[in-house]
Amino acid sequence: MKYIVIIGCGKTGRNLALEFATSHNVVVIDRNKTALDSLGEDFNGKKVLGDALDTQVLENAGIKEADALVIVTGNDNLNIVIGKVAKKMYKVKKVALQVYELAKKKIFSEEGLIIVNRTYLLVEVFKKCIL
Image (cartoon, rainbow, N blue to C red; front, side, top):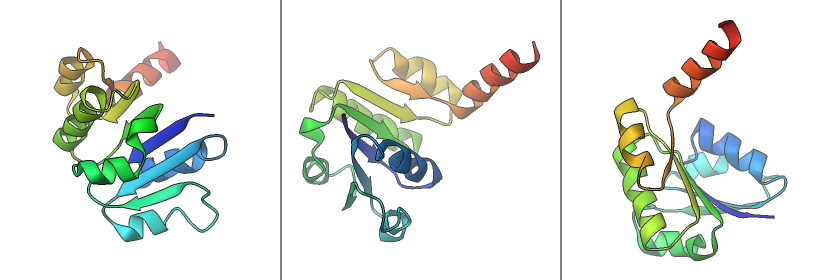
């Protein structure tokens, strides 16, 4: 069982949290209470209301114990900054984050961050399906 912290509770973050919480310890951070409430009453993980740029919020979420961190806010730069902090300051082993700009995928993958770009993934899936 892994300890997973997820930052961002939009559609992607919510679905990841609900999926991972079935077999792992999950903490979700978001600065929007309504987004956290959307996880529902049956969510057996922990919800942390706050700004993930605040190290106290990260520490309250248990970042020091995290096996993995997934960052899925709608802001590429925010995702990258938090990812770098998690990797360098807290030594989180696996840091995966979403970026919208494909150029950023190449740049930051070299820093040990796992960069996920939806467009790139869709292109790869469609290539496999039709070629």
